[in-house]
Image 1 (spheres, one colour):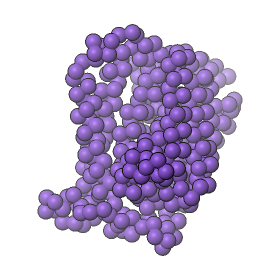
Image 2 (cartoon, one colour; image 1 turned 120 degrees about the vertical axis):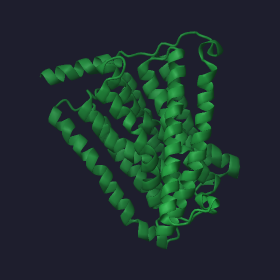
Image 3 (tube, helix red, strand yellow; image 1 turned 180 degrees about the vertical axis):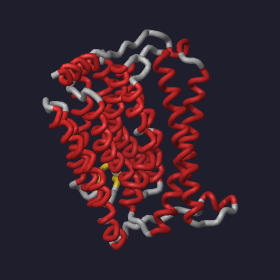
Length: 367
């Protein structure tokens, strides 16, 4: 009873964290240094993404991996795992505003990541496809892997939503355990399908020369791995600098912690890393590009919600329901599109519209 009461109080306080935007002119409120940090960090992220995709392609090529394993597991986890620390640290430390503020930031970051991936990330690769392939352009990922990723995502995400309405502690713990087990099962299924994908022509092929070879380093797996680690360091360092810059600007503009967690931090942490997908769309490597996003969606909708269920009140409120509802709608829309032979780039503009609706509602309803 005490635990249930504490959880209800936590949920109430979580729901009461609101956004307050002060009417301060942007130029007057934001120091030039913060803007410079954003610009430099984006350049660093772009350089890291180019090095990352180059090294990953060569590693996948060398070991005969399918594009499904390379994109949905290696690329997705490699870029998503470092940023998964954000909600964990927020929940554990409580944040500057105390336990409930830290919980709000943690839950917001957990929910914001799959929201960004299912809406804005797909919108961006759609825009890149339109720019490269014209109005009738389409994206053609390997269909079985795309189906698998989306169905694992939907199952995990629905379980996470269901946990919001389970009143008993043991039921919530059971759901968290199932969510934890879903991800290794997903990895096993993806690896198991790899050989068949390679045989059907979906092996990973490197584009061009390994960048490390330009400085006369040998073209072997050790050097490829070294380049991959350097690339990850650049992406992570650039992303953290980007988050710091966005957070500083948000604070200077008077944006509250929950809005920051639901709308700003996930954008800052997820979007720069998805430059890998934009690069792969540019190179017409659609399975790698889409797998990088859908693989991260499975990761972010299974393991992290399990942590949220076990470590926070994980209760329903309007802001939580809004984020989950739009994410679920975007995921179902992607499943509908997956029945087509190719994803029309124009159809992915609706994913961007879904995020725009979410963002506008957060602002206009004062969440």
